Image (cartoon, rainbow, N blue to C red; front, side, top):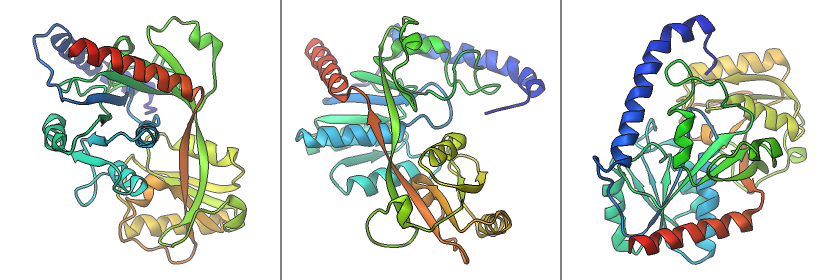
Length: 331
C-alpha cells in the first residue's frame, strides 16, 4: 500500500482511531474481560501484522505437510473470505495441494468450525490468518513478516499497511521473516520471540488448464514472459521470477484476490503483444481467480512455489516443545 503522503496525512486521524480500537480489543482479551474459546486439540495460528502477502498460505501448507508426515490428523481453519464460488483462492490452493489428507473448517466462526471437526479426532488445528482472530484461543502464534518490506516507520490502517501496532508482536511466539536469510542486525534488536527465516523455492511451472507434472523454466515457452498477478505483494513475485531466470517483457499487478474478467484478459493480451511476450506467467493463487476466462493467443503458465525454512529442525523442535508445555499447563 503505497499511498501518496498527502493522502496518508488525510487518513492519519482515522489510523489513530483504528489503533485505539485494536489496542483496546487486544487488552480486553489479554485481561480476561473478553473470554477466548478453546478447542480440545492444539491450535497453531499463522498470521501477520500487515495487509498484503507475507507467506501465510505457504507456511500453513508447510506445517500441514510436516505434521502429516508425523502421522498427525490435521485440520485447517480459515475464514475463506473474498472467494469466488464460496471458496477463497487460498483455501482452493490448500485443498488442491493437500488432496483430502486434511480436514477444512471454513467460515467466520472458526471455533464452531473446529468443534464440528473435533469428532474426527483432530490432533492439530492450523488457524490460517489467525493473529488478529483473538476469539479463538491458540497454543502458539507464528507471525510472518515480509523481509523485503521494513516495518520501521509503517503506519496503521487505513493510512498504512499495519493491521496492529508493532508492539502487538509481543503476543507472537515465533517471527518468520520471509524472502531473507539470517540477519544479525535484526536478531540483535531484542524481539521477545524466536526469529526464523524462510525463502520462496520454485517447484516448477504448469500449463493453465493442462495436465501433467511440473516443468522447469527451460521446458516451457522460451520467453520473454508477461507476468501478472493479483496478490498482496506483486513486486515480490516479479522479483522472484527474475531471480529464477525468467526474462520478463512486462508486468501487470491487480488488486489482491482479483477476480479476472474477459475484459482483463483482453487488456493483458494487448499489453503482452505490444511488449513482445511469448507467454504469460501468473501465480498459483491467481489461477483459481481466473474462473472461466479464456486466453486466445498466448499460453499461460502457473508458477508453483514452496517454502524453504532455514533451521527447520530447530523450528519444529521449538514449536513442539512450546505446545507440549502449554498443553500440559492447560490440562
